[in-house]
Amino acid sequence: MKPGDVHDATYYFKCMIGGSLACGLTHAAMVPLDVVKCKRQVDPNFSQSLGDGISKIRAEGKVTLGWAPTLIGYSLQGLGKFGFYEIFKDVYKAIVGAENADKYKKVGWSIASGSAEIIADTLLCPWEAIKLKIQLSRAGSEYPSQLGAALAKLRAEEGTVDI
Image 1 (cartoon, rainbow, N blue to C red):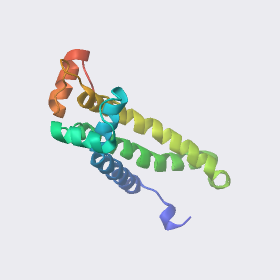
Image 2 (image 1 turned 180 degrees about the vertical axis):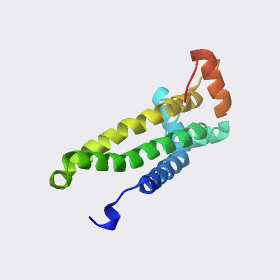
Image 3 (image 1 turned 135 degrees about the vertical axis):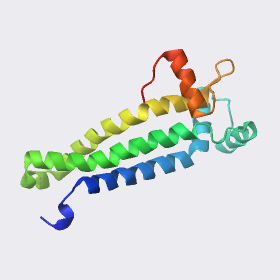
Image 4 (image 1 turned 90 degrees about the horizontal axis):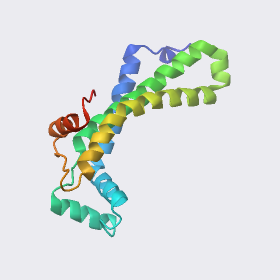
């Protein structure tokens, strides 16, 4: 075994931080596109094009609508996706042995990836839900655009939210 093959807590932590930064920052940067996409999905007449949609949300002051839950949710998803993928690769390798792990590595990687994705998406889901409530609220049921206030409203309307 080569020195680089030894994975310890520091290695997994680095994978988690890298995944968190990669997913959280890139998804947060795409929030304006996401706002337009989501608004067009619920109302096909919202805009004629992406450019028209961007202009509309800019005029409404909603370009960054939902950025906080997007950043938190996708950071957590990246943490789970990248970090747990590496953990599961090593766990499954230990279960089947190094020789079988190498022989069937594509299968092992696929199973490790699927296992990590379950954790990643579970971490993302509550944040994606609050993001959508913020981005897609309609007149009369307007959700606050600030994360803390939106979470308070969600708790009041739907009960305790443990995130």
